[in-house]
Length: 614
Image 1 (tube, rainbow, N blue to C red):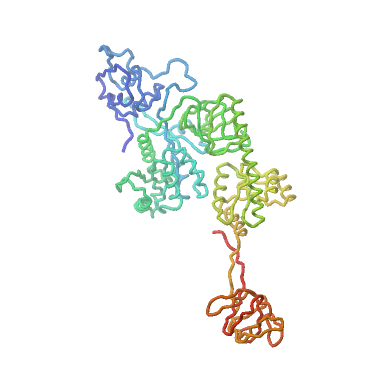
Image 2: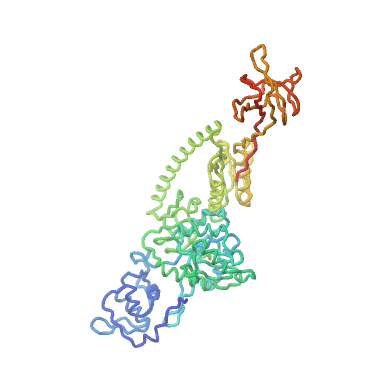
């Protein structure tokens, strides 16, 4: 399958067509005998962004046709006034924002998913190496959570190479980072599912399939590591079919590509299929007006301050725009791409790193351009007020929960979570919340980015919470406060260890299992009345032992007629603590006098067994 635009310069030479009225992109493509995408690319070079059903002016249609070697006649039969081969230029000064109204084609956004160690990072690295622009500019790729590549997509009629952009989201692979992958899927168009040919479909592969389907993404399967000796692509196809992904080779509609990221095999084919699928999706966005986008990643850089990676989804984001993202705002001072190049604008499907926010936003927040900084601050103040109300409600709820905890109605482990980036906060938080059961609950009192501070310790002390840090540390003031307030701080660098530690803590809050242990059985062979009116059972211990103070059941005909405790145990007129099998004894049961010869007394005790969280 090829993406190359059919060459038409030679075949079009000397041909005449008539253009008398505006045409849609599709109609113009039919007149020229080329694909609609090729016409869109020609229009882009003229500075026109048009979707497939958008009308193209006579002037622009004429330029496109002449650029492909056609002689264009106006309605009166005369040749069109635009000279053949005229350079595609924009008259006058470039506008601040694109002029086309309505949706226009945009690059596809692709998220890479799959099981851990199946080669997602290696595949992304291999894709980065194919980027023509990266080689042209010689820039070093920076990790900003997303990047774009320019992919060769055929040639025009003059033999010039054509390129199309693809945006990739870089999401982690560990199962605990479900939220990050889900967030990536929500802003993506296509999911590339990476499956190792030597390993097959694994739990996180299935999880990734579920996320892609839930988000309505078109799935492309990249069968990686085909260079391995034990690679078995056919087994992978069979396993995928079991989960509803039937490959085209097997009569289904799922595109599969065999690749080796380390050997750079099949990478060009994968990119070609991504562009083909994108064509069928007819992806569009409106580049006019203020921008909206999604925060992909955010952090506090020690030199730059708050930084955030934004994927623009509509409108055009410009340096100098006033923006709001969650409960943060600011004015964009600078924008850079993944190679660190400064940009003045970012159109739909473009990922950029922005500077100028007054605080670190939360990954997944929507970034919106507003009229000015004053409006931005007003929006943030309203959102903060709403958050304060929610916090107040949460505090009251926490007090109620603590009271229920003291009454034994509910078991909780209160946690204050700090991590290095918001993506990690989401990942750890979701992993901990999944440990909650009907009996014991993890409650995240607060979650944020950055080192553990004294204010975190004070909140933990007030909330009876522990502090968990992931890839962060506690400052000296926080450590002193933790010692004074007797607050526990635990820091981890490996997520598995963190989850296991919390699981163990939760197990300590679980109600223990009550297990009954039978101590012994004795048969009633005679009864004696005491001067006080109480009846003593004269018994023979058949097995085990009878113990004073132990619980005891009275069985008659195999049915329990009383359940009490042994109040007195005597042997040969002496009070004893216990008596073993084979001996006779006198037993007095508190609150029970209705003994009959032949009754069986079964002594038992209840033990508590600690439970583990599964």
